Length: 203
Image 1 (spheres, rainbow, N blue to C red):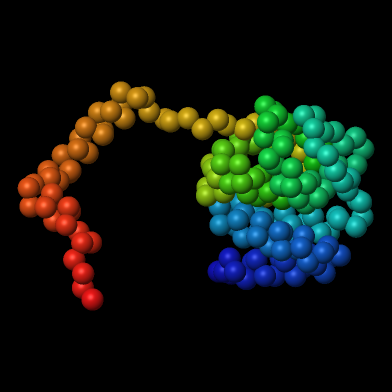
Image 2 (tube, rainbow, N blue to C red):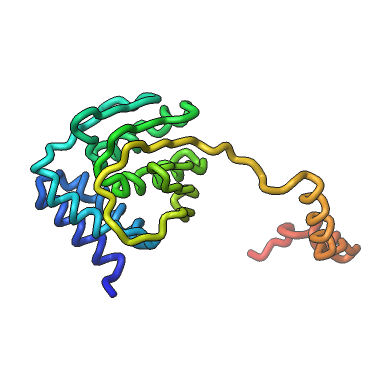
């Protein structure tokens, strides 16, 4: 099995060979490492993307708004991802963002995952009917388990999930009370030792 480190290095070099800058290539290498780590077909989709890249002349995007639509030519997932990551602290204030007509959308996904870490919020992403919950760039929960190429999608819907506890205040108080059984009761000797700590001159 090819290591994640080799996947990172090789896909980075291949991206540079396709005409991208070393900076962009670095980002793609990291992304392929992430996708393969999470069991998603990153290399497979990147390979197909490279076969179509110079033929299709995918559309770029500069400023991201609530609704972003590419008409006849789909968005480039890499350029879209880089701009999304650059603007993540601004776009997180938008409740929901839509991207219409994106090529190879799985290549966009790790940019969203990394954005989740930057803003400290989970991000819910729906690629047509495929759902992904991105957890601070630590895990991706998804209903998509196939190792296949997704050449294009009609719609990517992104929403930012507010940080809330999964438990009630009462449940927390109950479990905290149990934890108190491990607390050490302060004795007189402990109080004396603590009071005198740091006062002895050892020079």
